[in-house]
Image 1 (cartoon, rainbow, N blue to C red):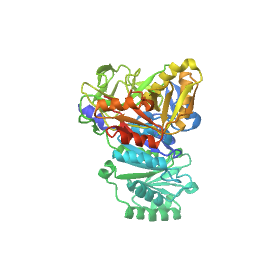
Image 2: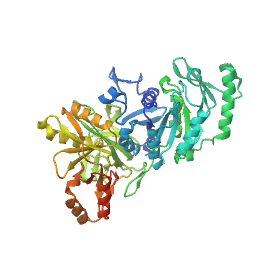
Image 3: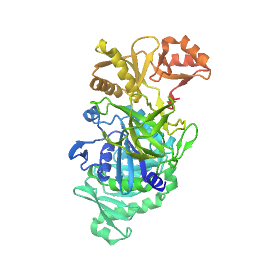
Image 4: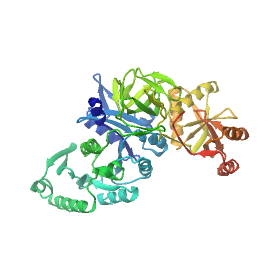
Length: 527
């Protein structure tokens, strides 16, 4: 049992969040490089062959240079096992990010030194704050001209209501960027010509070695800046960090491998081990012997040759072993997990065992849905896995009428993995697809064409918004659906959805039917 407890304590499960172009994917690959998971950034050695293992593994991601799906990568570093979840940076794919954040214990916020806090970063931080997720900040691209470090710290503190405490401090910027001073360990970190950091231990800022290693003007400014930092910023408070109130700030340049090692050390030292998880029935502790977990993501066709569908499961407790028989509360069935996998982005390896905090993949054929729980017998429904009403809705039609049935099957599979919302109107034959951002339509069309060989087009639909409808009285809900058939649809789970033509239509329905709840957000906790 002590071995199990030690294994759980060594886990660090975290997400990387950022606005597009802040350097998130580059930082992800450099963390893998330092963790020994890859030998060259972007390549993994597998059976003697160099194979692509970028976190952006989908064809559309590589063509457009953006992240549109969350990736999971597991690696070891200095006695810790890290489960890194790389999230989509583009706001049009934010729903996948929100669900991913339900599966982590901490997050790294990446900021561009020239741009500071941007819109998508602010939105993602709001989600983290709702769950009090501890945040470590990495200010990236110090090798380029950017804003003053004090301005960036002030923006984080004022704009995000987070107390800041620098863990390192930059020396120069852009062409004059020389490295950082490690405030936690009193070390001078110099950037070598080939990137990376060369550590030099110091006996504080008065150490004469600083004068020997740095230009006089740089030493003077460093001493002045750090005196201000220590006077203005609070010291690191582990409790405030774990409660989500304080963020340690690291500076660096991911593209040059600089500051990445220090960030990794910070994650190992500060980030929490697996945390308790709330369920409707009770709170589940990671130290419990019985295996429990929940599905936070479904990814279809990671291997197009096999038309597979992988359910991503966050283990909440217990010591999982390959071949385990787990109860599926929604269906009441027992699932034999014969071929669980661990991830290196698109690459996988068979998971013989895993413990609380790990992310494993379970191959399935549609029986598992986002929000489903699995356990060794107990009926549980984990909370905090959101689904959002789509902002934009369009009709989808196949260019080949003979493939209409195949199109429906493809849409349902994509809806089950959370790629978009799919609605089948009660009246009418056309499917409706709802998304948060218009770029999702391009990605969906590309995936349907390449993964299912069905050319499709999306057309405008006269729908303003969609709302799930609920009522404590089943007879009133049935009456509402009957009286509003022309505006009703079902989602991929068979839940009733009201399709409003405009804002007035939605308001009128809410006024006429006060007992009906029109939901913009729904928890993915299938019954």
